[in-house]
Image 1 (cartoon, rainbow, N blue to C red):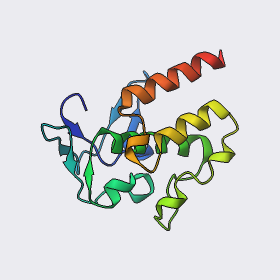
Image 2 (image 1 turned 60 degrees about the horizontal axis):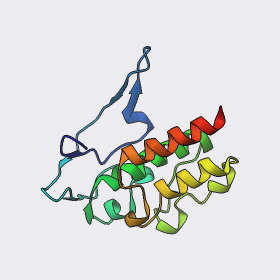
Image 3 (image 1 turned 135 degrees about the horizontal axis):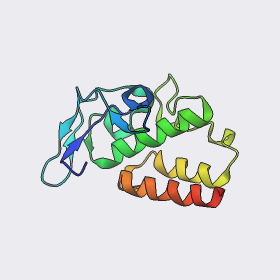
Length: 139
């Protein structure tokens, strides 16, 4: 994001971790350059199970679309369920959040996958900060 791009297809399969724990995001085929205001018009392409509602609608997107997908990836890792059910209805986003037993982690995921972009973390850095705070509480 800091380099002016939106990935728009973040999902577990596109995040690689090597033996030294270095993270690489792959598959930038539908990535879009952000306009000067930090937005882009979504093409509607991507992996529907991890796509923010505004992206699925082909509307204006910003960093929060990738935040949704990143939080959805974490949701998938902890719940074994995709954040969007096969129906692609916004009402089913994170419907199994109650399966996440840790209430603090559940709150982070809920905010990261909020159906309305304005209710989400505004950046991946904010999501990471929330996760670091949660991690500190686990120690």
